[in-house]
Length: 318
Length: 318
Image (cartoon, each protein chain N blue to C red):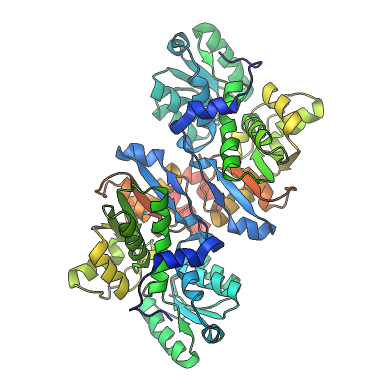
């Protein structure tokens, strides 16, 4: 079983995942390129199975489970995209799954978890409570905690996004990535810097859930006071320990965005880029379109997810 | 100058367009594949510059214009996507452009035409009136009519969609394409059948604008009585002469969809495929998701455009 001292092996993850994940396209964006005056591309990870990058990390972790671990099942905490990925992977592999979600989790994500056959526990006022109840559940059941970001196998799985990106464009100058717990950016930073050491990695997070900014200021992960953000996918109580250790070495810049800037990014995603993102999934596009990103071209924005209720989307776009 | 007796040369178009168009991705759709029980892919042509496939045909035609023709300018009729492509290409090439659009044309499309610097004439009750007024304008000005679909250079440009598709997946079994005037499907059918003669070509059109169905029944293009459809991009008064001649040889099946089926396809595009389509642009997805397409796998649906006002989209998805 991987532990936080295990190496993060992106190449092994790429081999393990094989054809079970979508090799998502790196899409040219003439509209963003014209706006910025330099070449902009989008790694369209919202086109991944399950509608977000999360499947990669979950599948890589689950494939390393023993038969005994599989029998005891999997449990996790997630606002939605990780939960959906856990539910899909566990259903496919015949593993019982229980997901602790904050009470206000997006209904479309809760429904996705339940329709895949997993148990969704919503009796949690916020993510911190959900983590505490997860710990109690695991004590009782012996289930394996499939952490959404603080796990080397999960980070390695997410890193395959970066490996694909550099395989498609070895000359990528700047890679812009949304941050919640930091698993995606940590994996991408490791994969990109190993392949293109000169590439710049820019983190983007909501002002209202600036977990990486807080961690960098404090010298380590700290609990961030909970404030509601439309980018529900980017709002865990803190960045992870292992992601932080990687980000502090490899992330070159951190951009924080207001709620208005995030919604502006959503509109850019739809109107200019024709990608049906969720708010958090469009955060890198928001930073780019808003002129908040410095770095050499070509600039790649990772569009990380698209799980949003149609009615919520309609309200935000109207 | 190409005429309707010129050959439709897709290879020459591909060479002429080069890097000026986006080589759009052929995206795996696990959600559609699971629903259908066979491999389904999406040619995501809504990610093209200008938000639809139209740029290909326009650019291919404009690049063949003489200096004298360029000075007299370009005129056309379009409900929007062709108009936007004409405006973008003519702006880039310094050619005056006038577009006759039906009065009810989508505001987002009219705005796109005007913001690119072209003249949009909206004094037209419907597309038939627009075509008549175009003829009078051309008599006065000597402008070149850049027909949205009844032109071999335009059809050849659209055919590059099919050439890319088969280059990516030479084993494509069935290709599903929305039909308005028929330029896209004619070009794709020529390109696909030349490269993969066994592949099946399926046309999809709105019941309320079933121009190809009417033409096939009559043995040639006929004016279809105008009925409003949410798929505004698929509602010219009739299919073109040259597209019809190609389709009658190469199209294997025609599916017509109700307005409810079209909106269902829009929802599939957003919720399952994460692509920000317009209604007409999602018609092939609608046919596929609705179980209306027969043919061997892998099945490729062409998502042809994404130009829809955010407020309209919000209303349809809510």
